[in-house]
Image 1 (cartoon, rainbow, N blue to C red):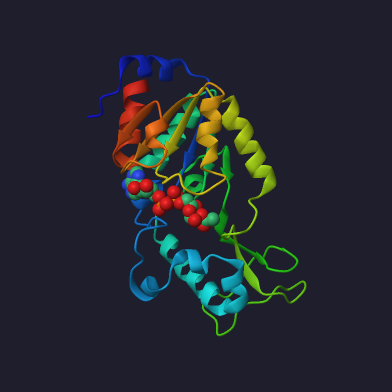
Image 2: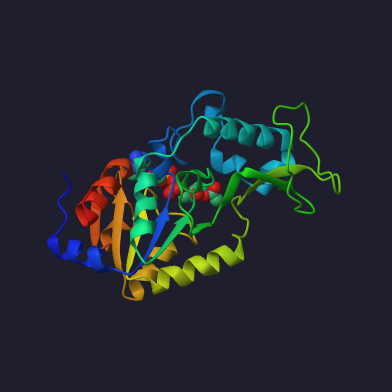
Length: 246
Ligand code: OAD
């Protein structure tokens, strides 16, 4: 059982504006590897940070396309876990709840969360690498990378690669929600990738109580107001139960 300080519980029972930032740790209990976990099988010899880049796509588009096709296949078998559903419950109980995610797996929306900002895009969306037109359908397992029907450009996942800009609108809205929040939850993220990692401190600098839920301590941990070490699929449901009961 989590030991939640009574003063925190009292705050969480009446808070009106909450923002949360989630990372790959929230999807780990859905069977999806976190970003910096060692990858298994065919891809163990590649560094993901080498593949998720425009340079890698320019150099070997088929390798990058196949890596994302493999990840989409892995996600197809994944289902939201208790942590995703606890965040859906929070959104239903709290007046103004914003979910900001670095995850590209789409599991928050699948679980029923609605007010979501996907800072790093969504792997289940595919667009043209030239004209950015979204593809409705595409071949996953092909000899060559599928091409855009509009301009013939190579298709790519609609995710943010290293060195690419985040979707400006999403980032601005996420920053606004973070700064306006009274409580900010950093969940299942190592908190090392900017600009997402800066949202927690921006919230705290504007008076929010900063809570971290993570399997292990992170560079953010020394600055947070409350740190609950554990699996988000266990900690989040316990937190919801402690705040609102059954
Ligand atoms: P990381 O793999 O960097 O961090 C995942 C965090 O989740 C780690 O601190 C783990 O300890 C923790 N963790 C693992 N399992 C957990 C569980 N069951 N419950 C709670 N915590 C758990 O993944 P992210 O922080 O999401 O960006 O990485 C951020 C970004 O770095 C990704 O979005 C990706 C990557 O570069 C892009 O692709 C642009």
